[in-house]
Image 1 (cartoon, rainbow, N blue to C red):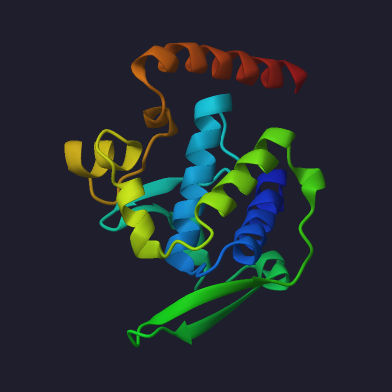
Image 2: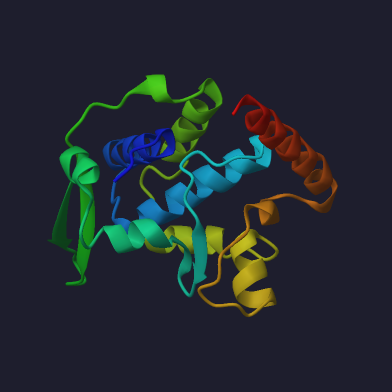
Length: 184
């Protein structure tokens, strides 16, 4: 497996949310990652983790991470412990516990601020409490799942932008991509 900067950040973010929020099971984690990536994209034109999200019935799902949880890659397994606990309603919940210290060095000040904001805002929230926030009308998940009727389809990051923001942000993204291409 190739380990890149986004992958390192993803693992760090999972550990951060697991340590800094309560009731951080798989569904809550997926929603926190979605909020982090889409809010950061709206501000900067790029995600934090590089994940791709699909519109599933219960909300946005980072499909590759969802699949990896069945057989974690060595870097993930070394950094994050997973276990199932039985909830009061007798349903099992997959939980995460970091086995490494969080490294701020991988993140920008903006990313750290957004991580802190989300952890604080959803500290005691349970996954069911967060479903509504991901399903709001005219938000990215709603545009794909409800408006387009495309269940399990990819949710484009551009859907986080308003019409006014879209052209300006896409121009910034094109300029950044051209700059990186010129550096190769």
